[in-house]
Length: 226
Image (cartoon, rainbow, N blue to C red):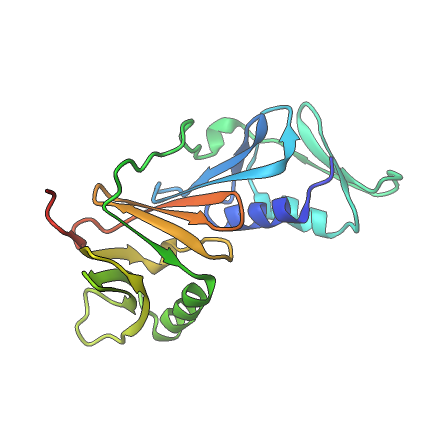
């Protein structure tokens, strides 16, 4: 099997969420952070025919980078990375699936979301950089029932820096507080839906990948339910 560039990018992104990964049979990859505040799911072009686990995705990616066009063979107890002529090769043993924090079997469903909007790659990239410069730990999506703003700040410090950008419109009032450190999405623009029950879904507009990220429910506010 040869891994596409898109699949390698997904694995690289997933390694920032959880260093290990449980590969299930089929063409869907899922991961979840250790404290279960980030869940991601992607559809890839390859189809895995066996279930196995790798403890360190970064090691696999580093080994792959040593080869120009590697072939991967997923055997009973290891993945073998090699040139097509087999003159060079590496292998990495699988680990016990018990060592991996496994995501749920079923996809998380956000039925009847309380609000939705679009977050463009340009706006997300700008805000990430601005929050990084200020050391802001929080992102806030806030609507005054007219415009939606994305704000980077520290909700626990009134003297902290603030960055603000208008990202859309809404006829609902809401204030959604999240942690900057949870924004580990792959590059792209996203359709965002949020539930007051504590979860936001970021669905990539051009790639088959979605992220489910916890919101800070105690600090967030929504219009009263009708």
